Image (cartoon, rainbow, N blue to C red; front, side, top):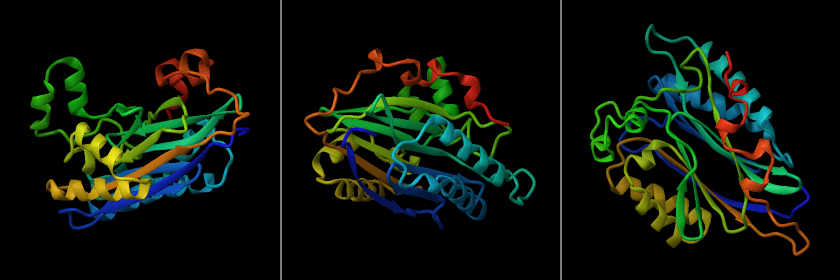
Length: 272
């Protein structure tokens, strides 16, 4: 990457009211991912650790491409499906993350998501949810069968429709976002978003100092609001360009590879 774009980051995790922590994470440039396991403590903890482990060889790379992510997700899914499990209780995991990539020498956030863990971007005082939940409740919201208020009390709100290893096919979604020096990226398991509103999350991201302080504050707030689930937070700050660096292009100015997931080749994201 020809720019001098750098990152600073912080990580926090807590078990909450659960008996064990089935979340796993990796925060080591250029890759920042969170996985939330499912299938019970033994299976979920192993599943999330497997998919995160598959990403570990991306550490230290100057840039990462979408194909690199597909390959590691596919390998992780195969390993998870091979795990021994009682009938009807297979292991699986969500995955959400941000990986630093580039286009034309300019830095981009490569965002990946499977399941209901999330990636947000805070910039210019506003919070944007980049990922879209792959969940039953999100499908009902999209179809108009549930209102946002009803969704808060929906009894199956934690049922996911995509996960790594738990389904025959893995369908990750990807986004390419121009990376700005004032971006603050948040990757989190649903233990955070199940307790805090987007407004509360933004307030803490803006008020809590550096990325480690921000991660700690978010997890502590989730615990204070009930902490019903494992909660894991990775906060990544974008920092600085040289004066000679080119202006970062907008999505509208970039090529086909830098469009939202639906404008990439969807077949490439469907893996056996």
